[in-house]
Length: 64
Image (cartoon, rainbow, N blue to C red; front, side):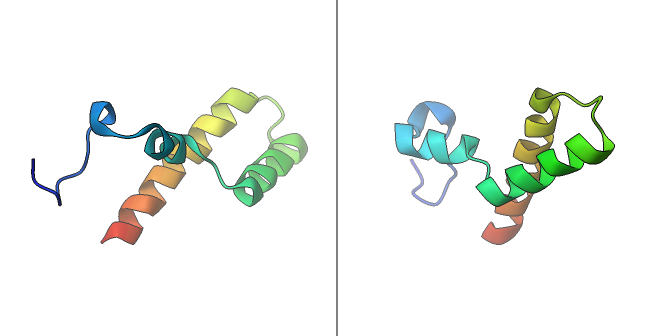
């Protein structure tokens, strides 16, 4: 296995998997404050999906 190649989920350690699912608390608070004020018809689950997707984009950008 190439040490520089990205690990697949099956090769990741539990701590690495947890990091993949983690949403920064500040981002969570800002997003849910926005949801409560402006977009109450959006579920918490959908907002968390948005945050997770944005986090993946930010992490990929930081790796460049």
